[in-house]
Structures are given as structure tokens and as C-alpha cells.
Image (tube, rainbow, N blue to C red; front, side, top):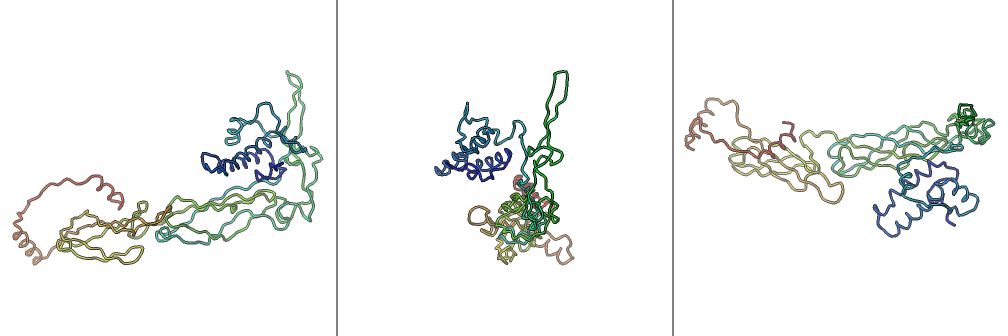
Length: 366
């Protein structure tokens, strides 16, 4: 007969909430809608059958006594699965376990654009709860064991009978002497004060994949807080914050660069070397280029987070018109205008591409 506890990955003394959490976690990974592989579907049926037994107190008791646990009046239905995923129902009876799962933790780290594009590895310092090495998480000193609570006799709860107009009413509440554990630690560990864990600062190596951006999270399983009683650790989530670049603006996997050129260079054309994440790259500016024109440089953007290749670098041209001219320059410009038959005050109203204009303005904060 299969070991239902091993199938769900839990200890035999866990409470109903822990069984529910274990099933919920596995079901989200193995549900046929998520993974249609036949082998995975067989595994999903296996964990569902185990949860059907262990989630029902009567079936679980029968199973723990050597039975199959597979007796019921209605079977395991949709409501049971919904309850496993979303919680519900009444509270659990009996003592609660000292060993419980730890909490997840979140830490934010800042990376520059170069690290975000190509990936990197970071050493981060994290202070969290770790298993107490003095008592190995038991919370007991000198290899001692918790003793049964004399007040509740190991039940973890006490009962009180009160009288009301309806008659005698019996209420149950967690035992104040043992806090609902059903046992007390008579000789607590001096290092952790009976909690089974202590605070400690750890250095963890984090691999940051190429293509990450602000808001992306990296999950490090089992590197979060260790639970009370030396319980399994939660997960550590590393959230990425990308710092702004000096002159490159990121839009997804595309990079944007504003390049200012002189009026003469715009008219005559030129080749200008610009700095990219890959080093200097020559950009050919054709004669007659106008302000607002764009020049794409393929595969010089950010690495795609999922899949190979990279985005592009878009160079935005800005033609700089002189604001101050000396007498000689003014004379030469007027002569140039005469040669082109340009008249003073002559202008042409042209329509611009509003969508592009707004995108360029937003990208460069204008």
C-alpha cells in the first residue's frame, strides 16, 4: 500500500492545514491543465487519492490504524478540491505541531543596464531565521524531549462547561499552559529559547539571468525563513530593480539613444561612433537627414529573457540649429539661402506622425 504521507511530502504528525498546503502546492504543478504529460497526470491522480484519505479525519484515523482509509459515503468531489485550494471549513481539533513551515522572504537588489542585459552573479547578505544548531531545531536542551501537558493531557485544548438559557454549553479553546501544542518544553534550549531557530546573517550567491528588468523575481527554493520547531524553510524571492543608464533608455528589449548632430553634418551626411553596451559602433548618417529620423542598429539591444537573440538599438537623430551666429557666419548663411532661392519668412506647415512623436517624447522625458 502506498504511503500517502510520503506521496504528499509531509510528516505523519502534521495537522490538516499542512496537508492542505502540501496538496495545493503539488496540484498547482501537476494539474492536467498545466501539464498534460500522461506520467504527470498519473502523479496528479496519486496525490489526489492521498489527499482524499488524509484530508478526512475519519479516513486518516482508519489509515493510521492500518486500514486503507478508502471508505466514505460520497467520495472526494469538487468541493473538496476547492476547499484544498482556497481554504474553508471549520477549525482543526487536537494539538498543533511544533514544527511548522517557515515564511517566504523578499529582498530587492539593484542592477545596472549592462548586468540586466547580459546577466551576472551576485553575492547577497540576508538575515533570516535558521535552524538552531545547538538543539537541531527541537527547542529542547541536553537532548531532552517535550513532555505531555499536565493541564490538557496532550489534547492541546481545554473544555469548559457553562450554563445558559439553552442549557449546558461546552466550549473548547487552546490550552493556555502549552499554547495548544499538547506538550511543554521543560528544559528549553538556551540558544533559541525553545523556538528551534535563531537569527543569522547568510551570504547567498544569486545567478541573475540575462534580460531581466525591474519587477522580475528570482525564486530561491528553501532559502527563506526556517519555520518554528526547525520546520522546513520558505522560499527567498529576489526582486530586480534596474538603475537608469546615463544615456541609453530601455523599452522592453529595445534600447533608445538620442544623437545630436550639427546642421552641416545633417546636410552633408557623416559617420559618428556611438557607445553601446557592446562598445563603440559606427553609425552612418545619410545626407539630408531630418530631426526625428531613426537609425536602427540590429542586435545591440537587451538580451531576450526567454529565447535567444537580442533586441535592437534605435538611434534618434536631433539636428542642432545654431542659436548664435557671428557676422561672418550670418553673411555666409544668407548667401547660402540666396543660392537656394530661399526667401525670408518662407515656411511650410507639415504634419508629423503623432504616435511616433508621443513615443519619442515619453522615452526621453520630453
